[in-house]
Length: 91
Image 1 (cartoon, one colour):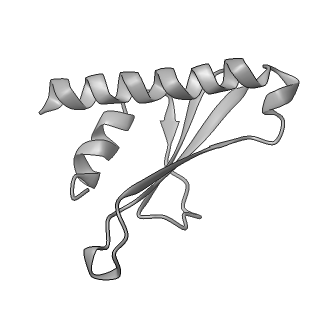
Image 2: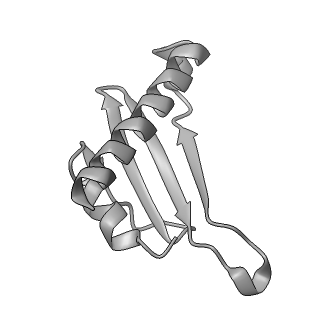
């Protein structure tokens, strides 16, 4: 929380676009494979509301046409691992 500019910069190391239609504080679409985009939505913490920071990872509706669920979960987990590595490098 409070590090959105750093997070956005880290995301640019991947095949990422930043859609304008974003219900969150930061949205990014990362193509982890050519036909498998993952949409990340980052919500900053709102302490006055009692809400912690939150991240959602959404899959394209066609994702299961290309990979099984276990493989999609692996893609999401690996993206998070790599993103954390990049953030650590840049800190």
